[in-house]
Length: 397
Image (cartoon, rainbow, N blue to C red):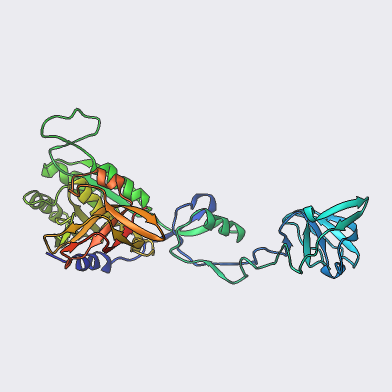
């Protein structure tokens, strides 16, 4: 049985990034950049006002209050050709360009109009105050977004500020999902003794979408070889194939036989982990194929620890989930040498994280995946942990 680290290395070692495609800016939310984005201009493009007020030269404010002659108004989107002289001010709107001869903006609340064309400045102000300088956010030539960046609202705004109408992004990996087992029925069917509703198609589909892929559900194959092969063939053009419930003793021989007839090359079966021990991995051609356990929690944990890292590498992103260190609120006893992945709730107090088990950790306790904030990793050589011991917790949201 392989150790977890060895198995993950095998999964990732032959993976190369997906091809890229051009996508218009309005459709790249949550996509992953396939290029470095370099600033083609300063942001802001020109010096501009940070608020409504009056553009002045602070040399005019040797003492306050001070009355200045208002010689114009600078509106947003308008250029100004006039250079201010001492004794003059210009009314200015937030975002409007700073006129020549000005070095600060007095907020409107620190002024009062005393006559037509005359403003009284009530308080001193330092040079540069309330001025946004050209390039103070981004300098021309600066790499503002790196290849492998997931595009959220802030990144979309930055791309727009760079004048980008379209963006080079990685193609989304298509992930085929096939469920096996004569006991599996559709969610809408009446539940009968010996039957189990299909959970994994929907939980795996959600995980694929969550991490940027396109799910391709192939349905329920049962344990009939002809039907199994027919459904497998429908997924052969995918980037990844997931076969749920075909890795237990006896059933795996049946699934393996079907896979082998399609040219499957097995890399491993069984990993020293809990849950998820019977996971299998191999290739049909260049397509990675995972055999995931049928128990819902085992299936989802196996996805998070193996399929998700592979999906991240396909789009040139970091493969590791974010991690924190937390203090245990629940004692843990481990009776084997496997790596355990425990579902925990997190509490943050006094600048520290505390982790408590969600409850029973059985591989069929679906509620543990709903209630958890993260997954605590208990290493292979750790036998017991007491309350107050530190654990590493993967954050899954």
